[in-house]
Length: 117
Image 1 (cartoon, one colour):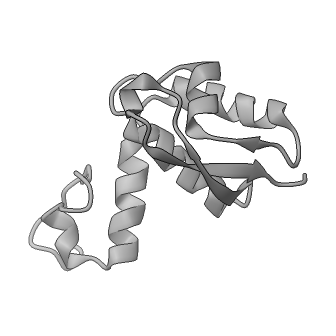
Image 2: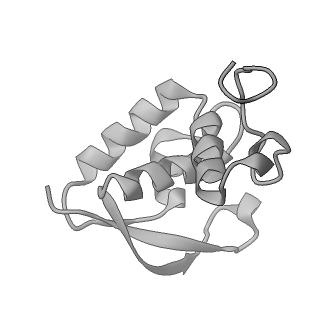
């Protein structure tokens, strides 16, 4: 027991998770990001793509998924990985573009720039 009624392993369901209501917003976001990344093989391919881009290159989620495909399971893994990269100071937001993927119906995407190594 660590102060809660029961110790449980928690897989966050996202921003409306009942379990996370007792944590701060930042803690809930961290739990959601970590639980979203479930296709580790895809995450490794995506990270190899990022390294291959080199410094000061602009790219979007469309560019990434065109190069390495979509992850198995939730496509939210793409955004979760971008959050991790940004927190690790590997990428920086630089603007917005319109998605070219037909399944995105022309929605706006953030454009990112790789950091200098």
